[in-house]
Image 1 (tube, rainbow, N blue to C red):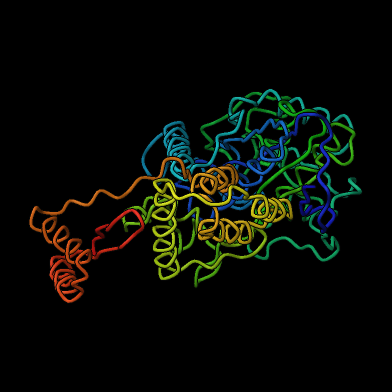
Image 2: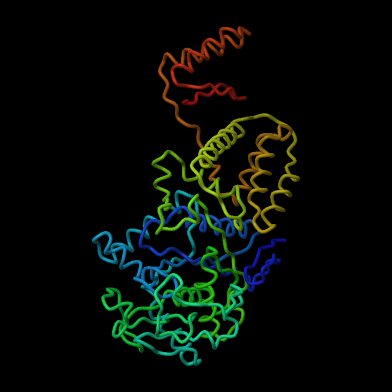
Length: 465
């Protein structure tokens, strides 16, 4: 039985899909800059969920958006469009910015072994769907025009506070952003920005004709229109980071349920917690913005970062430091070497891995408890009573969820001189002769040349010091 935590109910629930095929929507990136590793944690977590659903033999239709217009520098409708700002920063067109950062995001996904969605959908390719949905909201009587923009009137939507458990009377605008004097209520939000008369977008490059003037959509309408196009009026799962709960996802619900006259629009809301550095949660606007490419330049493997994320539950904060990543890099290297050792080992033993499989499935089906699932995997790897081939088969099955690409793991190629190779051979002969003193002397000589020796069941392995 798969149980998942639902942000909407604030409790774990048995997962029962609406239809035979699970409808799964993930809030994708706004492609104006590189994704930082905190962003990428969200997609790793969603990937673990997707893999767990597959492990449990569910059919899935997974949809992810690419936001290439309409997302302002503040989620609550103030500031500049992020794509426009990125274009100004780099001296490129908005289209070039969106294309470049879409590609880099997909490259990062590949490096982290994150499975691609069944459907990629760009906001700029779904303007018609957004306009059609806004018309339905307008017909339902939930909109008003002011200052050139079309707004959603949240006071008319009775379920507005449910997802975020908001205290609506306490909400105030302007604490960290400029006040939009056009709004009737602080929590109202823009459905359509009109360039004429709008202080938000007079020089906006991306623009389309609409019943409310030439302009562009608000960010929140995008996910509603695209998810509903591909998954229907109601679907099973919507994923994203916890930062989306109070504004973006709350506003999505208001629009979608109004336009389609359904409740609930999404059955289960899946949110991961922040990646934390010393200065606080990671953000692109802060000095703690770390991208995957920087980790690679410093010598860390992308799958080491995935391994790092697996060691913490998705609903817990994950504390990042270079020291922690050093430890994980070393742990991942040992993990990889052990996998290779098991794969190359022909040792027999019991073929029964059922107890480990049961523990693993219990962990992942308990709200994706990856720390326990990873611990079960390590226990199995170190259980010498189990035959190597049976052990390896079970671990590969576990990897359908963990996504560490175990089947592709290879030994590190160590380039050692003929002299080092001879010293290693002589040491092995000394060990066979039980000449431990000579073996130790040869080991020390090898160490002085910059190598350590790892004695494994399949023979000695050289490692760079």
